Image (cartoon, rainbow, N blue to C red; front, side, top):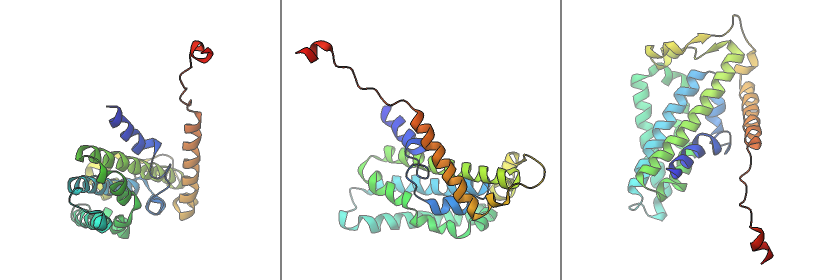
Length: 224
């Protein structure tokens, strides 16, 4: 149970791929002009990450060290192609909005990094959990960034969710205030501003947590 909690805490918060590792910043900055786009990109990456971790863990005893990186890339590329085709068929409008960034999941260092550092060394169950935790952390980061940029820049939240994610997601759409917001927030510069502020906020929150205290040494032991 402790290991499960550690994996989940690392993926979602402590070792968050965007806010702590500062990896996968290209999609984090490029597709987060709105919360809907951030959520869609995060979920696509989450699906690939879980599936690739599971397959790498299953095949880890068959893949030799000499070919492990090409084998991992081949597995990831196959899964990304499947996700790309599924999104084009079932979520066509979202597929058009995300565009080139769906195929570029292949070169997302998060996915290859987890295959190399975790999945090829652990069981299928733990690898699936690691993929879920890291994917949820990535989705959380993209959705939160998109939500902040959209609220500040447009005064809306999850705009276009019914069109991009399906009619059932229309309940997420809302307008927070009338009129327009701060235009720069939905432009590329706004992505850098929001990302920097969120990284700083996470570090400030982490710094406020009390450090684990070492066990006190009994006085008798010191005297001896």
